[in-house]
Image (cartoon, rainbow, N blue to C red; front, side, top):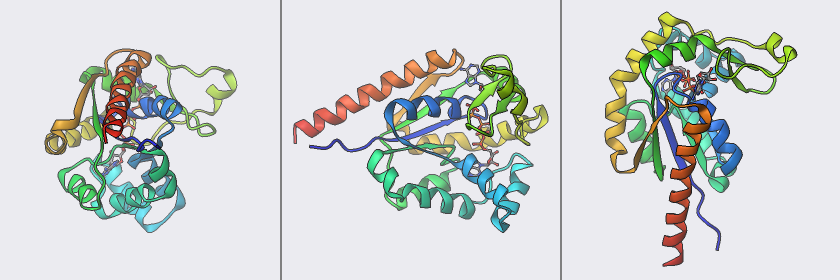
Length: 222
Ligand code: AP5
C-alpha cells in the first residue's frame, strides 16, 4: 500500500528563501528539487543558444520566454525519479500562462507554499548571498556564513544579485504573483519568511506533515 508521492510548489519573491528551504525539505522528505532558475543557469553554462537567449532576460530581471523554461521544467518533471519520489517545484510557475501549461500536462500540486518576506529583508539577503560551487550550498555573509576558510575562499556571487537588479526582479515578481496565486488559491499556505531559516522550515515541516497525514487518511478510507 504505497503512499502517493508529494507534489509541492514553493513560491516567493527573489531571495525570500526558496532555495534554502528546498535544501531542508529535500533532506527530510526526499523530493526531487526542480528549480527553474538553476535549470536556466545550467543552460547558460552549457553555452547553448537557449542559454544565451535566457541570459538576456535574466540580466534585465525579466521572465525568460515560456517555451524555454517550460520545456526544461517539463522534461525534469517527467523523469522517473520525480514520478516515484515526488517533486518540489521552485520558481515555476511564475506567470499564469506557465501555470496553465503545467495543468494541461496533468501536473497538479498538493500544496502551494508562499514565502512572505518584507522587502527590506529581501534586498539585504540578495546582496549578502554567496554560493558554494562545489556543494551547491547557499550561504549568506551575515545570516549563514561559511563554516571554514576554505569554503569562504571559493564562494561565488550570482550575476543578478545586485541591489539594482533585485529591484527589477521584484517588480517582475509583483506584476505576476497574483495571477499565479489565483490558480492555486484553495491549496495555498502562506508562510512568514521573516524568521530564521530553522523557524521558517518548522512552519513548512508542519504543513507538509499534516498534508501527508491527510493523504494517508484518504488512502485508508478507500
Ligand atoms: P531564480 O534563480 O529562481 O531567482 P529568484 O526567484 O530571484 O530567487 P532566488 O534564487 O534569488 O532566491 P531564493 O528565494 O531561492 O532565496 P535563497 O534561499 O537563495 O530566478 C532567476 C531568474 O531566472 C529570474 O529573474 C528570471 O529571469 C529567470 N526565471 C526563473 N524562473 C523563471 C520562470 N518560471 N519563468 C521565466 N523566467 C524564470 O536565499 C537568499 C539569501 O538569503 C541567501 O543568502 C540565504 O542564505 C539567505 N536566507 C535564506 N533564508 C533566510 C532566513 N530565514 N533568514 C536570513 N537569511 C536567509
